[in-house]
Each structure stands twice: as C-alpha cells, then as structure tokens.
Amino acid sequence: MGKAKLFGTIGKMALGAVAPDVLEQGTKIVNDQLEKRKDYLKIPDVKLLDVEKATAVIDKYNFNHSEVPVKADLHYADALPNTIVKMEPKGNTSVAPNTFVKLYYIDEQTLIDSQLLAQEAESKKALKKQKTQE
Image 1: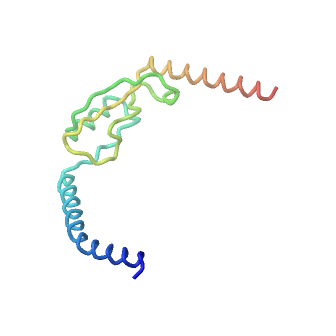
Image 2: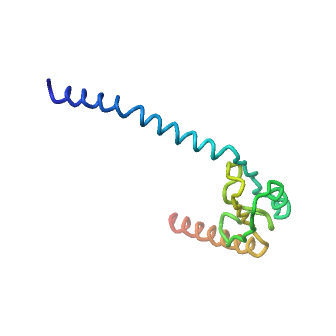
Image 3: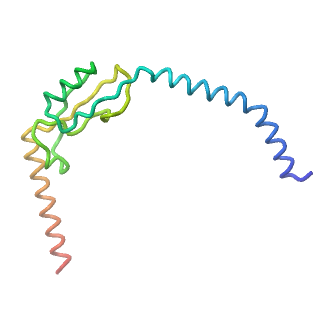
C-alpha cells in the first residue's frame, strides 16, 4: 500500500470518527446564534433626515441613542445643515434591542468649514492639472 493511499485511508477513518462530533458542535453553534438573534430589530436608516425627525424615529424603536456632531470633511460639503450624515450601527442592520445608536449630524458651521475644505481641494486639483499641462 502506497503512502498516499495509506494517508487517505487513515484520513477517511479519522473523518468518519470526528465528523459526527463536529457536525453536532456546528449545529449547536448555529442554533445558539439563531436563538440569540430571534429578538433582533432592524435599525431604520435615518441618514439625511433632520436631527429632530431622526431622533423621533429612533425613539419610536426604543433604542438608546446620542447625537454627535461631525468634524469638517470634504464628504459633507453637499450636506444640509442639522441633518444626520452617518449612523452607527449602520441603518437597516439587525441588532439587539439594547444596542446604543450614535447619530452623527452636521451643524451650520461645520458645513461651512466642509465647503471651504472642498473649495481648497478643488483649487489644488486645478493647480495640479494646470502644472501637468504645462
């Protein structure tokens, strides 16, 4: 009997002895996770809503939450003031009922700062393009 065939036979015997236990443990893990998640709720996506409406929706689902101001960023240059621009956990995900939700909003000053950052980035891009063409 060759080495490959011998190892193959031993492997099959070991798998036959171990497989039922592994399968049973795997089934137990899956069932535990399903039981744990049966009460999960889907967080509504409140991005782009104003802060008052967003907090009202989150309150309706009885999630504990807080509103957190964001720092100026290029990505927020087109946002509306006093709107939710990001949330954690993300909207439309299933979470435990006691999950804490953070609602990140942009205020007017941060919006202005974000727009200035966007203008600066656009100016740098145009200058770089001009230098490349020269």
